[in-house]
Image (cartoon, rainbow, N blue to C red; front, top):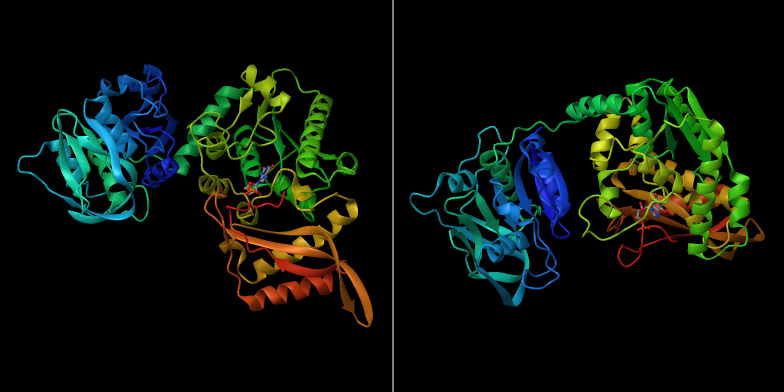
Length: 536
Ligand code: XMP
């Protein structure tokens, strides 16, 4: 399958480049900007058709600015440098990059000038779109989106300027004889007019990629890989009940059959209402035969007793999770050759800095990435992560193809430590039960009101505060509940969901009337940053 490699120099928009190109139907891979560009990475067997150099928060003339393997310039593949990527190519090829008097940020006009007799590869990028590509022809005058503190003050030998920004700086630069292109702006950002068309022109027009990246194709490929890799060995998957592990389970069951697949689910007592029932029903519908439900609520509540500090709570949960995991897996008595499957996504690898784009910030570490069992299995090559090339929405699409229930696919994310990070202060069974009821009511109302799918994540938080109220003629001393609802693309940043006040009031009234221990309801109006999505 044809693919485009993206060298990541640490820009916040690297993943956007990736998304835009996948949405055009071409497979992409992000690798660190200074990765060795060996035969294994770029050779003819790999299907790589072109390379994109991403932006970066660094400058090319400082030591912090990563330098690509110089084989980049002899591999013969088309190159597209975006912002820092263009500056990197310029510096590496003998041009000059210097600081701007003032940083440029936001929408800036660009004018393209097409000289007579331009080389064919330049025409392919600027005018020669394949008519089957769903994009408009490139504009000669358009509004680009920029974010840069440096500019090219001398082009590298062999390059020519084809576009200039309204502020007078080179915006589009193309080599005269090689398929090397540079853009000072960010075509991957939606505010950039014609940006997707430009990326499509590079991918299809210049690199001659065929659009072969579809979920149907991925499914066939991943199923063939799974069968070869696993053979007749058993596979064990730890299920959390979320979209990723459920889709992984569905994939394993469909590919390997129910006799080979062991599913283990820990009922920690920190789950949402009826979670174990729902998970069981979903997996049985998908054909699960060996579904091991581990009931360990008492152990988790005992480990959390007396703990108030958020980090101490998270650590206690993580440690116990590992202890139980090892104990229960040993108890299954699977043969040594068994494989451990995980629902790791492409973004998990990026975010944990494991495989791709090591310059990207470390956002969250999943409690299972560092588990000794996973590490031991990884050492002997017995970990399988069949979703690790997919983004969340691609996983949802795959789930649909595999027949996973729509309600599971559309579920909001839920944190590994569960309700423990939504009960502020000490966690007790009584508080878990109160929160479970209130949270279930809240989510049910969102579904009834047709708001659930517009919201990225919604949940209730139980505060360690009791306040006075009245119930009938009596004074009532009830807990305070905070409702949270946010909109987000990926959980890295989030905005508050703008509820109509009338509906918030109705939901709050329903909760205080139904859950007798809740005396007061508040709505969390904090965005991320500065707040995080969860409270602990
Ligand atoms: P924060 O609170 O960091 O959350 O803004 C971002 C997203 O990550 C989820 N989250 C977790 N998921 N294990 C997980 O699997 C965790 O420990 C964890 N902590 C937060 C959170 O629900 C949100 O979707």
